[in-house]
Length: 571
Image (cartoon, rainbow, N blue to C red; front, side):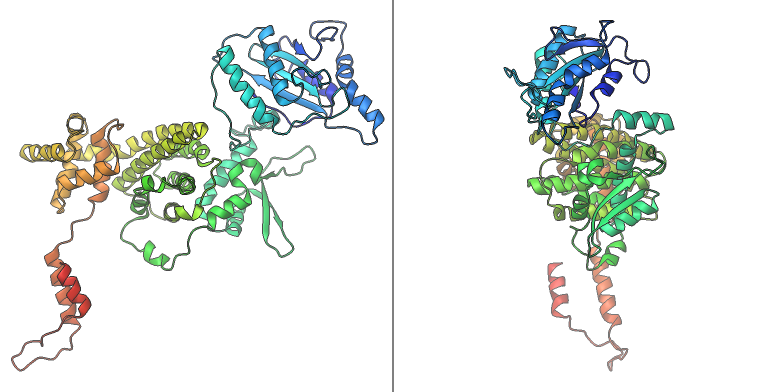
Protein backbone atom coordinates (compact mmCIF):
# COMPACT_ATOMS: atom_id res chain seq x y z
CA UNK A 1 0.00 0.00 0.00
CA UNK A 2 1.35 3.39 -1.01
CA UNK A 3 0.36 6.68 0.60
CA UNK A 4 1.81 9.66 -1.28
CA UNK A 5 1.48 12.99 0.56
CA UNK A 6 1.24 15.83 -1.93
CA UNK A 7 2.64 19.37 -1.51
CA UNK A 8 0.39 21.65 0.51
CA UNK A 9 -2.40 23.27 -1.48
CA UNK A 10 -4.40 26.47 -1.15
CA UNK A 11 -7.86 25.71 -2.60
CA UNK A 12 -10.10 23.22 -0.78
CA UNK A 13 -12.98 23.70 -3.21
CA UNK A 14 -10.68 23.14 -6.20
CA UNK A 15 -9.35 19.84 -4.87
CA UNK A 16 -12.91 18.67 -4.08
CA UNK A 17 -13.86 19.41 -7.69
CA UNK A 18 -11.17 16.95 -8.78
CA UNK A 19 -12.05 14.33 -6.17
CA UNK A 20 -15.74 14.35 -7.10
CA UNK A 21 -15.22 15.00 -10.80
CA UNK A 22 -14.92 12.48 -13.61
CA UNK A 23 -11.11 12.56 -13.56
CA UNK A 24 -8.80 13.35 -16.43
CA UNK A 25 -9.61 10.05 -18.17
CA UNK A 26 -13.12 9.30 -16.82
CA UNK A 27 -11.56 7.06 -14.19
CA UNK A 28 -13.73 8.28 -11.27
CA UNK A 29 -16.74 5.98 -11.44
CA UNK A 30 -18.40 6.43 -8.07
CA UNK A 31 -16.63 9.00 -5.83
CA UNK A 32 -18.11 9.00 -2.32
CA UNK A 33 -17.12 9.47 1.31
CA UNK A 34 -15.90 6.44 3.25
CA UNK A 35 -14.62 8.29 6.34
CA UNK A 36 -14.26 11.74 7.85
CA UNK A 37 -13.68 13.69 11.04
CA UNK A 38 -17.44 13.62 11.80
CA UNK A 39 -19.48 11.47 9.45
CA UNK A 40 -22.79 12.39 11.11
CA UNK A 41 -24.29 15.27 9.15
CA UNK A 42 -21.33 15.43 6.72
CA UNK A 43 -22.48 16.57 3.22
CA UNK A 44 -21.48 13.97 0.59
CA UNK A 45 -21.89 15.30 -2.97
CA UNK A 46 -21.24 11.80 -4.27
CA UNK A 47 -24.30 10.25 -2.67
CA UNK A 48 -26.55 13.20 -1.72
CA UNK A 49 -27.95 15.08 -4.69
CA UNK A 50 -28.69 18.08 -2.47
CA UNK A 51 -25.10 18.37 -1.15
CA UNK A 52 -22.70 20.70 -2.97
CA UNK A 53 -18.94 20.93 -3.22
CA UNK A 54 -19.07 24.51 -1.95
CA UNK A 55 -20.98 23.40 1.14
CA UNK A 56 -18.46 20.61 1.86
CA UNK A 57 -15.50 22.95 1.29
CA UNK A 58 -16.99 25.54 3.67
CA UNK A 59 -17.51 22.79 6.25
CA UNK A 60 -13.86 21.69 6.05
CA UNK A 61 -12.47 25.25 5.93
CA UNK A 62 -14.35 26.55 8.96
CA UNK A 63 -11.38 26.45 11.39
CA UNK A 64 -9.19 28.06 8.71
CA UNK A 65 -11.67 30.89 8.16
CA UNK A 66 -11.99 31.46 11.90
CA UNK A 67 -8.22 31.65 12.39
CA UNK A 68 -7.81 33.96 9.40
CA UNK A 69 -10.43 36.33 10.80
CA UNK A 70 -8.62 36.54 14.15
CA UNK A 71 -5.01 36.84 12.98
CA UNK A 72 -3.50 39.39 10.64
CA UNK A 73 -1.56 36.93 8.45
CA UNK A 74 -3.93 34.48 6.76
CA UNK A 75 -3.20 30.78 6.35
CA UNK A 76 -2.98 29.83 2.68
CA UNK A 77 -1.09 26.48 2.57
CA UNK A 78 -3.81 24.62 4.47
CA UNK A 79 -4.91 21.84 2.07
CA UNK A 80 -3.37 18.43 2.89
CA UNK A 81 -3.85 15.76 0.22
CA UNK A 82 -2.81 12.11 0.43
CA UNK A 83 -3.87 9.47 -2.14
CA UNK A 84 -3.69 5.92 -0.72
CA UNK A 85 -3.49 3.04 -3.18
CA UNK A 86 -3.49 -0.74 -2.75
CA UNK A 87 -1.34 -3.04 -4.88
CA UNK A 88 -2.97 -4.52 -8.04
CA UNK A 89 -2.84 -8.03 -6.59
CA UNK A 90 -4.41 -7.05 -3.24
CA UNK A 91 -7.86 -8.30 -2.29
CA UNK A 92 -10.97 -6.14 -2.53
CA UNK A 93 -11.35 -3.77 0.43
CA UNK A 94 -14.80 -2.67 1.56
CA UNK A 95 -15.79 0.93 2.27
CA UNK A 96 -15.60 0.19 5.98
CA UNK A 97 -12.07 -1.18 5.65
CA UNK A 98 -10.95 1.81 3.60
CA UNK A 99 -12.48 4.06 6.26
CA UNK A 100 -10.47 2.32 9.00
CA UNK A 101 -7.31 2.63 6.89
CA UNK A 102 -7.91 6.35 6.37
CA UNK A 103 -8.39 6.81 10.14
CA UNK A 104 -5.06 5.12 10.85
CA UNK A 105 -3.23 7.23 8.27
CA UNK A 106 -4.49 10.61 9.56
CA UNK A 107 -3.59 9.51 13.08
CA UNK A 108 -0.06 8.57 12.02
CA UNK A 109 0.39 11.80 10.04
CA UNK A 110 -0.59 14.01 12.98
CA UNK A 111 -3.71 15.33 11.22
CA UNK A 112 -6.05 13.70 13.74
CA UNK A 113 -4.21 12.02 16.62
CA UNK A 114 -6.19 9.37 18.48
CA UNK A 115 -8.42 10.84 21.20
CA UNK A 116 -7.83 14.44 20.12
CA UNK A 117 -11.23 16.20 19.94
CA UNK A 118 -9.67 19.41 18.61
CA UNK A 119 -7.83 17.82 15.65
CA UNK A 120 -7.98 18.94 12.02
CA UNK A 121 -10.99 18.31 9.81
CA UNK A 122 -10.59 15.66 7.15
CA UNK A 123 -12.45 13.36 4.76
CA UNK A 124 -11.61 10.26 2.71
CA UNK A 125 -13.13 9.92 -0.78
CA UNK A 126 -13.11 6.59 -2.58
CA UNK A 127 -12.64 6.73 -6.35
CA UNK A 128 -12.36 3.10 -7.29
CA UNK A 129 -11.81 -0.36 -5.82
CA UNK A 130 -8.08 0.13 -5.29
CA UNK A 131 -7.64 3.63 -3.83
CA UNK A 132 -8.92 6.54 -1.77
CA UNK A 133 -7.96 10.22 -1.43
CA UNK A 134 -7.65 11.85 1.99
CA UNK A 135 -8.19 15.61 2.16
CA UNK A 136 -7.59 17.61 5.34
CA UNK A 137 -7.42 21.28 6.26
CA UNK A 138 -4.40 21.87 8.47
CA UNK A 139 -5.80 24.22 11.07
CA UNK A 140 -7.04 22.58 14.25
CA UNK A 141 -10.31 23.41 15.99
CA UNK A 142 -8.32 25.40 18.56
CA UNK A 143 -6.67 27.46 15.81
CA UNK A 144 -3.21 25.87 16.07
CA UNK A 145 -1.36 24.17 13.21
CA UNK A 146 -0.68 20.42 13.44
CA UNK A 147 2.85 19.05 13.76
CA UNK A 148 3.44 17.40 10.40
CA UNK A 149 7.25 17.18 10.40
CA UNK A 150 8.33 13.72 9.15
CA UNK A 151 4.67 12.82 8.59
CA UNK A 152 5.68 10.93 5.44
CA UNK A 153 7.86 8.55 7.43
CA UNK A 154 5.14 7.97 10.02
CA UNK A 155 2.53 7.37 7.33
CA UNK A 156 4.88 4.93 5.60
CA UNK A 157 5.32 3.00 8.85
CA UNK A 158 1.55 2.95 9.31
CA UNK A 159 1.11 1.52 5.80
CA UNK A 160 3.52 -1.31 6.60
CA UNK A 161 1.40 -2.17 9.67
CA UNK A 162 -1.83 -1.90 7.66
CA UNK A 163 -0.45 -4.33 5.06
CA UNK A 164 0.29 -6.84 7.80
CA UNK A 165 -3.06 -6.43 9.56
CA UNK A 166 -5.19 -6.61 6.40
CA UNK A 167 -3.22 -9.33 4.61
CA UNK A 168 -2.06 -7.06 1.77
CA UNK A 169 1.11 -7.09 -0.27
CA UNK A 170 4.03 -6.25 2.03
CA UNK A 171 6.19 -3.40 0.76
CA UNK A 172 9.62 -2.40 2.06
CA UNK A 173 10.10 0.35 4.59
CA UNK A 174 11.35 3.63 3.13
CA UNK A 175 14.71 5.12 4.12
CA UNK A 176 14.47 8.58 2.52
CA UNK A 177 17.11 7.79 -0.11
CA UNK A 178 14.75 7.09 -3.01
CA UNK A 179 14.40 9.44 -5.96
CA UNK A 180 11.32 11.65 -6.06
CA UNK A 181 8.38 10.07 -7.84
CA UNK A 182 6.99 12.03 -10.80
CA UNK A 183 3.82 13.92 -10.02
CA UNK A 184 0.52 13.16 -11.76
CA UNK A 185 0.91 16.41 -13.68
CA UNK A 186 4.40 15.42 -14.88
CA UNK A 187 3.21 11.98 -15.99
CA UNK A 188 0.18 13.41 -17.81
CA UNK A 189 2.38 16.02 -19.48
CA UNK A 190 4.81 13.34 -20.72
CA UNK A 191 1.89 11.34 -22.10
CA UNK A 192 0.43 14.43 -23.80
CA UNK A 193 3.77 15.30 -25.43
CA UNK A 194 4.57 11.73 -26.45
CA UNK A 195 7.54 11.39 -24.10
CA UNK A 196 8.38 7.92 -22.79
CA UNK A 197 9.56 9.36 -19.44
CA UNK A 198 8.50 12.31 -17.29
CA UNK A 199 11.13 15.04 -17.19
CA UNK A 200 12.68 14.20 -13.76
CA UNK A 201 13.29 10.57 -14.79
CA UNK A 202 14.64 11.66 -18.19
CA UNK A 203 17.05 14.08 -16.51
CA UNK A 204 18.12 11.54 -13.89
CA UNK A 205 19.15 9.02 -16.54
CA UNK A 206 21.20 11.58 -18.48
CA UNK A 207 22.87 13.16 -15.46
CA UNK A 208 23.84 9.73 -14.18
CA UNK A 209 25.23 8.85 -17.62
CA UNK A 210 27.39 11.99 -17.61
CA UNK A 211 29.27 11.23 -14.39
CA UNK A 212 31.76 8.64 -15.77
CA UNK A 213 32.86 11.14 -18.43
CA UNK A 214 33.94 14.02 -16.18
CA UNK A 215 36.45 14.74 -13.43
CA UNK A 216 35.18 17.97 -11.85
CA UNK A 217 32.09 20.07 -11.25
CA UNK A 218 32.77 22.63 -13.98
CA UNK A 219 33.45 19.87 -16.49
CA UNK A 220 30.22 18.20 -15.35
CA UNK A 221 28.16 21.33 -16.09
CA UNK A 222 29.84 21.75 -19.49
CA UNK A 223 29.13 18.10 -20.36
CA UNK A 224 25.43 18.47 -19.51
CA UNK A 225 25.18 21.58 -21.68
CA UNK A 226 26.98 19.84 -24.55
CA UNK A 227 24.51 16.94 -24.20
CA UNK A 228 21.61 19.28 -24.93
CA UNK A 229 20.35 19.63 -21.34
CA UNK A 230 19.25 23.07 -20.22
CA UNK A 231 21.37 24.03 -17.19
CA UNK A 232 20.94 26.85 -14.71
CA UNK A 233 23.86 27.41 -12.31
CA UNK A 234 24.17 29.30 -9.06
CA UNK A 235 27.53 30.89 -8.25
CA UNK A 236 28.96 32.76 -5.28
CA UNK A 237 30.50 36.23 -5.38
CA UNK A 238 33.87 34.63 -6.11
CA UNK A 239 32.46 32.80 -9.11
CA UNK A 240 32.58 29.41 -7.37
CA UNK A 241 29.89 26.97 -8.45
CA UNK A 242 27.34 26.57 -5.61
CA UNK A 243 24.48 24.68 -7.22
CA UNK A 244 22.73 23.76 -10.41
CA UNK A 245 19.31 22.95 -11.82
CA UNK A 246 18.62 21.02 -15.02
CA UNK A 247 15.80 21.24 -17.53
CA UNK A 248 14.55 19.09 -20.36
CA UNK A 249 14.41 20.91 -23.70
CA UNK A 250 10.78 21.63 -24.54
CA UNK A 251 9.56 21.26 -20.95
CA UNK A 252 7.91 24.67 -20.51
CA UNK A 253 5.47 26.12 -18.02
CA UNK A 254 2.18 27.83 -18.94
CA UNK A 255 4.09 31.09 -19.58
CA UNK A 256 6.40 29.40 -22.07
CA UNK A 257 9.38 29.44 -19.68
CA UNK A 258 11.85 26.58 -19.26
CA UNK A 259 11.15 24.39 -16.21
CA UNK A 260 14.25 23.60 -14.14
CA UNK A 261 14.67 20.88 -11.50
CA UNK A 262 17.38 21.22 -8.80
CA UNK A 263 19.80 18.28 -8.86
CA UNK A 264 18.94 17.33 -5.27
CA UNK A 265 15.25 17.11 -6.21
CA UNK A 266 15.94 14.91 -9.21
CA UNK A 267 17.74 12.41 -6.95
CA UNK A 268 19.37 12.70 -3.50
CA UNK A 269 22.78 11.72 -4.90
CA UNK A 270 22.68 14.22 -7.77
CA UNK A 271 23.03 17.38 -5.70
CA UNK A 272 26.13 19.40 -6.56
CA UNK A 273 27.92 18.68 -3.22
CA UNK A 274 27.36 14.92 -3.66
CA UNK A 275 28.57 14.97 -7.27
CA UNK A 276 31.62 17.09 -6.39
CA UNK A 277 32.52 14.65 -3.60
CA UNK A 278 32.43 11.76 -6.06
CA UNK A 279 34.28 13.51 -8.88
CA UNK A 280 36.97 15.26 -6.88
CA UNK A 281 37.77 12.50 -4.38
CA UNK A 282 39.99 10.51 -6.74
CA UNK A 283 43.71 10.79 -6.14
CA UNK A 284 45.52 12.74 -8.89
CA UNK A 285 47.58 10.44 -11.07
CA UNK A 286 51.28 11.10 -11.49
CA UNK A 287 51.59 9.01 -14.65
CA UNK A 288 48.18 8.83 -16.37
CA UNK A 289 49.79 8.27 -19.77
CA UNK A 290 51.54 5.18 -18.48
CA UNK A 291 48.19 3.73 -17.40
CA UNK A 292 46.59 4.50 -20.75
CA UNK A 293 49.52 2.92 -22.57
CA UNK A 294 49.44 -0.23 -20.44
CA UNK A 295 49.21 -3.33 -22.65
CA UNK A 296 46.04 -4.33 -20.77
CA UNK A 297 42.91 -2.72 -22.22
CA UNK A 298 40.56 -0.60 -20.09
CA UNK A 299 38.16 -3.54 -20.16
CA UNK A 300 40.76 -5.87 -18.62
CA UNK A 301 41.77 -3.19 -16.10
CA UNK A 302 38.13 -2.80 -15.04
CA UNK A 303 37.88 -6.55 -14.46
CA UNK A 304 41.08 -6.40 -12.39
CA UNK A 305 39.62 -3.54 -10.33
CA UNK A 306 36.51 -5.63 -9.57
CA UNK A 307 38.63 -8.55 -8.32
CA UNK A 308 39.22 -6.86 -4.96
CA UNK A 309 35.62 -5.76 -4.41
CA UNK A 310 34.78 -8.49 -1.89
CA UNK A 311 37.62 -7.30 0.39
CA UNK A 312 36.66 -3.63 -0.08
CA UNK A 313 33.20 -4.27 1.41
CA UNK A 314 34.55 -4.90 4.90
CA UNK A 315 34.38 -1.23 5.93
CA UNK A 316 30.92 0.36 5.63
CA UNK A 317 32.02 3.75 4.30
CA UNK A 318 34.36 2.08 1.81
CA UNK A 319 31.66 -0.40 0.82
CA UNK A 320 29.17 2.36 0.05
CA UNK A 321 31.80 4.17 -2.02
CA UNK A 322 32.61 1.05 -4.03
CA UNK A 323 28.94 0.30 -4.67
CA UNK A 324 28.42 3.87 -5.90
CA UNK A 325 31.44 3.56 -8.21
CA UNK A 326 30.22 0.14 -9.35
CA UNK A 327 27.07 1.82 -10.66
CA UNK A 328 29.26 4.24 -12.64
CA UNK A 329 31.20 1.32 -14.11
CA UNK A 330 27.99 -0.45 -15.17
CA UNK A 331 26.83 2.80 -16.79
CA UNK A 332 30.12 3.30 -18.65
CA UNK A 333 30.10 -0.32 -19.84
CA UNK A 334 26.54 0.10 -21.14
CA UNK A 335 27.56 3.18 -23.14
CA UNK A 336 30.50 1.47 -24.85
CA UNK A 337 29.23 -2.10 -25.27
CA UNK A 338 28.49 -3.62 -28.72
CA UNK A 339 25.05 -3.19 -30.24
CA UNK A 340 23.54 -6.44 -28.92
CA UNK A 341 24.19 -5.64 -25.24
CA UNK A 342 23.40 -1.99 -24.33
CA UNK A 343 19.67 -2.52 -23.66
CA UNK A 344 20.25 -5.04 -20.86
CA UNK A 345 23.26 -3.15 -19.49
CA UNK A 346 21.36 0.15 -19.49
CA UNK A 347 18.46 -1.52 -17.69
CA UNK A 348 20.96 -2.87 -15.15
CA UNK A 349 22.51 0.59 -14.68
CA UNK A 350 19.12 2.22 -14.20
CA UNK A 351 17.98 -0.43 -11.72
CA UNK A 352 21.29 -0.45 -9.83
CA UNK A 353 21.01 3.33 -9.32
CA UNK A 354 18.73 2.57 -6.35
CA UNK A 355 21.40 0.28 -4.89
CA UNK A 356 23.92 3.14 -5.05
CA UNK A 357 22.04 5.17 -2.41
CA UNK A 358 21.83 4.44 1.31
CA UNK A 359 22.04 6.33 4.59
CA UNK A 360 25.69 5.29 5.02
CA UNK A 361 28.14 8.03 4.15
CA UNK A 362 30.57 7.00 1.42
CA UNK A 363 34.33 7.49 1.70
CA UNK A 364 34.55 8.25 -2.02
CA UNK A 365 38.35 8.29 -2.25
CA UNK A 366 38.39 4.57 -1.38
CA UNK A 367 36.83 3.71 -4.76
CA UNK A 368 39.54 5.37 -6.86
CA UNK A 369 40.37 2.25 -8.88
CA UNK A 370 36.77 1.47 -9.85
CA UNK A 371 35.99 5.08 -10.70
CA UNK A 372 39.16 5.36 -12.82
CA UNK A 373 38.19 2.17 -14.63
CA UNK A 374 34.76 3.62 -15.40
CA UNK A 375 36.30 6.82 -16.78
CA UNK A 376 38.80 4.90 -18.90
CA UNK A 377 36.00 2.87 -20.47
CA UNK A 378 33.89 6.00 -21.00
CA UNK A 379 36.81 7.65 -22.83
CA UNK A 380 38.08 4.66 -24.81
CA UNK A 381 37.77 4.95 -28.56
CA UNK A 382 37.86 1.23 -29.30
CA UNK A 383 35.45 -1.48 -28.27
CA UNK A 384 36.46 -4.64 -26.42
CA UNK A 385 37.24 -8.00 -27.91
CA UNK A 386 34.73 -10.73 -27.14
CA UNK A 387 36.60 -12.40 -24.28
CA UNK A 388 37.43 -9.09 -22.55
CA UNK A 389 33.80 -7.98 -22.65
CA UNK A 390 32.53 -11.35 -21.45
CA UNK A 391 35.02 -11.32 -18.57
CA UNK A 392 34.01 -7.81 -17.50
CA UNK A 393 30.25 -8.41 -17.65
CA UNK A 394 30.68 -11.68 -15.73
CA UNK A 395 32.69 -9.77 -13.11
CA UNK A 396 29.93 -7.15 -12.94
CA UNK A 397 27.41 -9.93 -12.23
CA UNK A 398 29.44 -11.15 -9.30
CA UNK A 399 30.08 -7.60 -8.06
CA UNK A 400 26.35 -6.81 -8.11
CA UNK A 401 25.67 -10.03 -6.19
CA UNK A 402 28.25 -9.00 -3.58
CA UNK A 403 26.70 -5.52 -3.35
CA UNK A 404 23.26 -7.01 -2.84
CA UNK A 405 24.52 -9.27 -0.07
CA UNK A 406 26.14 -6.32 1.68
CA UNK A 407 22.91 -4.34 1.51
CA UNK A 408 20.98 -7.37 2.75
CA UNK A 409 23.30 -7.70 5.74
CA UNK A 410 22.72 -4.01 6.54
CA UNK A 411 18.92 -4.41 6.23
CA UNK A 412 18.81 -2.07 3.23
CA UNK A 413 15.73 -3.70 1.71
CA UNK A 414 15.21 -1.37 -1.27
CA UNK A 415 18.88 -1.41 -2.20
CA UNK A 416 19.19 -5.20 -1.91
CA UNK A 417 16.12 -5.64 -4.10
CA UNK A 418 17.53 -3.21 -6.69
CA UNK A 419 20.82 -5.12 -6.75
CA UNK A 420 18.96 -8.40 -7.31
CA UNK A 421 17.06 -6.90 -10.25
CA UNK A 422 20.30 -5.53 -11.69
CA UNK A 423 21.88 -8.98 -11.43
CA UNK A 424 19.11 -10.42 -13.61
CA UNK A 425 19.80 -7.87 -16.36
CA UNK A 426 23.56 -8.33 -16.04
CA UNK A 427 23.22 -12.11 -16.18
CA UNK A 428 21.28 -11.86 -19.44
CA UNK A 429 23.96 -9.54 -20.82
CA UNK A 430 26.71 -11.92 -19.65
CA UNK A 431 25.04 -14.86 -21.42
CA UNK A 432 24.82 -12.86 -24.64
CA UNK A 433 28.41 -11.64 -24.36
CA UNK A 434 29.74 -15.16 -23.84
CA UNK A 435 27.63 -16.89 -26.51
CA UNK A 436 29.98 -16.27 -29.50
CA UNK A 437 33.02 -17.36 -27.50
CA UNK A 438 31.22 -20.50 -26.29
CA UNK A 439 30.36 -21.48 -29.85
CA UNK A 440 33.96 -21.01 -30.99
CA UNK A 441 35.44 -22.87 -28.00
CA UNK A 442 33.01 -25.77 -28.26
CA UNK A 443 33.85 -26.18 -31.95
CA UNK A 444 37.51 -27.05 -31.22
CA UNK A 445 37.58 -29.32 -28.15
CA UNK A 446 40.86 -30.90 -26.97
CA UNK A 447 41.55 -34.53 -27.74
CA UNK A 448 39.86 -37.14 -25.56
CA UNK A 449 43.04 -37.97 -23.65
CA UNK A 450 43.65 -34.27 -22.90
CA UNK A 451 40.05 -33.85 -21.70
CA UNK A 452 40.46 -36.76 -19.28
CA UNK A 453 43.61 -35.17 -17.85
CA UNK A 454 41.87 -31.79 -17.55
CA UNK A 455 38.90 -33.45 -15.83
CA UNK A 456 41.35 -34.84 -13.28
CA UNK A 457 42.66 -31.31 -12.74
CA UNK A 458 39.10 -30.15 -12.08
CA UNK A 459 38.52 -32.89 -9.50
CA UNK A 460 41.78 -32.06 -7.75
CA UNK A 461 41.42 -28.26 -7.81
CA UNK A 462 37.72 -27.86 -6.97
CA UNK A 463 36.58 -31.21 -5.54
CA UNK A 464 33.36 -29.82 -4.01
CA UNK A 465 32.05 -28.64 -7.38
CA UNK A 466 33.81 -30.98 -9.78
CA UNK A 467 30.82 -33.12 -10.72
CA UNK A 468 28.61 -30.08 -11.40
CA UNK A 469 31.36 -28.55 -13.53
CA UNK A 470 31.89 -31.71 -15.56
CA UNK A 471 28.13 -32.15 -16.06
CA UNK A 472 27.70 -28.54 -17.18
CA UNK A 473 26.94 -28.18 -20.94
CA UNK A 474 29.74 -25.60 -21.02
CA UNK A 475 32.38 -28.11 -19.85
CA UNK A 476 33.73 -28.79 -23.39
CA UNK A 477 34.28 -25.05 -23.84
CA UNK A 478 35.99 -24.83 -20.42
CA UNK A 479 38.25 -27.74 -21.40
CA UNK A 480 39.29 -25.80 -24.51
CA UNK A 481 40.04 -22.71 -22.40
CA UNK A 482 42.19 -24.77 -20.03
CA UNK A 483 44.02 -26.37 -22.96
CA UNK A 484 44.70 -22.95 -24.49
CA UNK A 485 46.00 -21.63 -21.17
CA UNK A 486 48.24 -24.68 -20.77
CA UNK A 487 49.67 -24.02 -24.21
CA UNK A 488 50.63 -20.54 -23.00
CA UNK A 489 52.56 -22.07 -20.09
CA UNK A 490 49.90 -21.91 -17.37
CA UNK A 491 49.03 -24.80 -15.06
CA UNK A 492 45.32 -25.70 -15.39
CA UNK A 493 45.17 -26.91 -11.79
CA UNK A 494 46.44 -23.56 -10.51
CA UNK A 495 44.14 -21.51 -12.77
CA UNK A 496 41.12 -23.49 -11.58
CA UNK A 497 41.98 -22.94 -7.93
CA UNK A 498 42.49 -19.20 -8.46
CA UNK A 499 39.27 -18.84 -10.44
CA UNK A 500 37.25 -20.72 -7.83
CA UNK A 501 38.70 -18.51 -5.12
CA UNK A 502 37.62 -15.37 -7.02
CA UNK A 503 34.04 -16.54 -7.66
CA UNK A 504 32.21 -18.87 -5.27
CA UNK A 505 30.48 -21.57 -7.27
CA UNK A 506 27.74 -22.73 -4.92
CA UNK A 507 25.21 -20.22 -6.25
CA UNK A 508 26.44 -20.33 -9.87
CA UNK A 509 23.78 -21.53 -12.29
CA UNK A 510 26.43 -23.01 -14.60
CA UNK A 511 29.74 -23.38 -12.77
CA UNK A 512 31.75 -24.26 -15.89
CA UNK A 513 30.50 -21.15 -17.65
CA UNK A 514 31.34 -19.04 -14.60
CA UNK A 515 34.93 -20.30 -14.71
CA UNK A 516 35.44 -19.73 -18.45
CA UNK A 517 35.58 -15.93 -18.41
CA UNK A 518 37.66 -15.85 -15.23
CA UNK A 519 40.27 -18.25 -16.61
CA UNK A 520 40.32 -16.50 -19.98
CA UNK A 521 41.02 -13.24 -18.15
CA UNK A 522 43.78 -14.49 -15.84
CA UNK A 523 45.34 -16.79 -18.43
CA UNK A 524 45.25 -14.42 -21.40
CA UNK A 525 48.99 -13.68 -21.26
CA UNK A 526 51.73 -16.29 -21.64
CA UNK A 527 53.71 -17.24 -18.56
CA UNK A 528 57.06 -15.36 -18.58
CA UNK A 529 59.87 -17.53 -19.96
CA UNK A 530 62.80 -17.25 -17.55
CA UNK A 531 65.39 -18.32 -20.08
CA UNK A 532 64.13 -15.84 -22.66
CA UNK A 533 64.11 -13.08 -20.04
CA UNK A 534 67.72 -13.93 -19.04
CA UNK A 535 68.82 -13.87 -22.69
CA UNK A 536 67.05 -10.53 -23.22
CA UNK A 537 68.78 -9.05 -20.16
CA UNK A 538 72.19 -10.31 -21.28
CA UNK A 539 71.61 -8.88 -24.77
CA UNK A 540 70.60 -5.53 -23.30
CA UNK A 541 73.74 -5.37 -21.16
CA UNK A 542 75.96 -6.37 -24.05
CA UNK A 543 74.46 -3.69 -26.28
CA UNK A 544 75.28 -1.01 -23.73
CA UNK A 545 79.07 -1.78 -23.75
CA UNK A 546 81.31 0.32 -26.02
CA UNK A 547 82.24 -1.51 -29.21
CA UNK A 548 85.87 -2.31 -28.36
CA UNK A 549 87.43 -5.74 -28.16
CA UNK A 550 90.15 -7.31 -26.08
CA UNK A 551 93.27 -8.70 -27.59
CA UNK A 552 91.65 -12.10 -28.19
CA UNK A 553 88.82 -10.53 -30.20
CA UNK A 554 86.16 -10.96 -27.51
CA UNK A 555 84.06 -8.36 -25.77
CA UNK A 556 85.37 -7.47 -22.32
CA UNK A 557 83.63 -9.05 -19.36
CA UNK A 558 80.87 -6.95 -17.79
CA UNK A 559 80.34 -6.87 -14.04
CA UNK A 560 76.60 -6.83 -13.26
CA UNK A 561 75.29 -3.94 -11.17
CA UNK A 562 74.05 -4.69 -7.63
CA UNK A 563 70.45 -4.38 -8.87
CA UNK A 564 71.07 -6.85 -11.69
CA UNK A 565 72.78 -9.21 -9.26
CA UNK A 566 69.73 -9.10 -6.98
CA UNK A 567 67.46 -9.71 -9.99
CA UNK A 568 69.51 -12.76 -11.02
CA UNK A 569 69.60 -14.02 -7.44
CA UNK A 570 65.78 -13.92 -7.22
CA UNK A 571 65.56 -15.89 -10.46
